[in-house]
Image 1 (cartoon, rainbow, N blue to C red):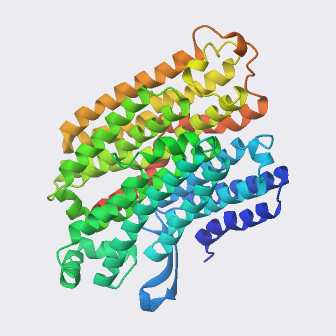
Image 2: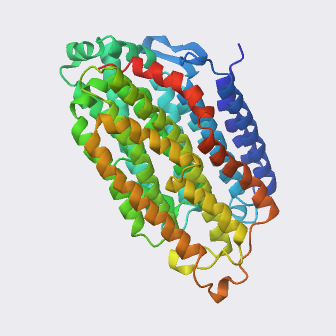
Image 3: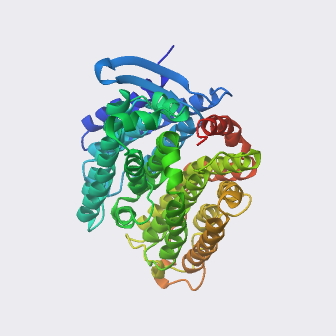
Length: 511
């Protein structure tokens, strides 16, 4: 059997080396990156379309690596992993397309820039396919390194502290993950995710931990939770994100919000709940409080920002807060009946669909901000604009589609996933769900304010010649916006493949 997942992960790494050799020839480096991104998108789409209906792992690759230490090369994807591969491929292609050859990047080591983007993509692919902790952790960390240098070398003024804060926060989370899994290896002798999940499902994991290390299962669960909470992020571990998103080059911000933030949610679904569902159920109430705070405070913080990148940075926290709300609501302390299982299924379907929808929508919004930034001389203050629909009606109309998707307008992709999340969470945790509705209302106010202040009102004299989208820009944006519409009208295109994985995951999460 052809090692599809290995090939998929290797393509951007090899292309990154080729882009690096291109040096200062920006057009060649970008061309290599585009070819690699299109190739991985096509291969990711084929993997997605080839998944079976069982919900189990497909495209499995397995080989001994260091057997004495429980380390093996073990890859595989189900509906969750394959969807994240597809999302990563789409967002990477969008980020490369947004990195124009005539921008600041072209004059500052373009070969290195595109090589780092491709290396980041390789790290994402490895994270979403690895099923052994050692292998998975290598890619988890691999994605951090290029992101740090992309922010540090090509970011806006103040990028140094932002990059350092990003690195320190995520490294703290990584250390917590590493310590927790080293403890699991001491207790079980295995780094394999499926082996550990099976031990948790049959009730043998906790006794193994207690017999070797004592009653520390809850502490291990909190360590794993911390590693992923920083990445999503969950408040109060979010303070790195607004500065990072606002100071990073906008194409890099697209990668951070569109793909890298999903690594945290993915880790919660792939590792935290399967291995430590019982322990997380013990602290379910404080976790639901933090998730509700993430939803409401994230939206409220977005409402008071003046910089458009910071507005949508906080909006990203708000939107991923819905995923956290649903994940923590699923972690029930006791067995569940049929009605509860139906709610859990709806909530988890919504989480996975929200991961994809938010990644697509947020990356598109930051892409539009990149265009706005280049046309305005780098100024993204919301008070700097007004009336842009007159000189640039196509730009405002297409960006409006992405904004309304973020708002959750029925008929667009954002509505379906948020509806499923609230449909599932309400019977499981009605009070947090009720309070979290405030996040929807505040988000609507934020999005409508952006539309009013940027697109409508008096047109300042300096923007009377504001250039509209070119035919090339319309051509590259159209497929992304069309996908938002298709998923809003026919979400079953994704849910039909995701739902078997959801049922398979929930079957192993009976606490």
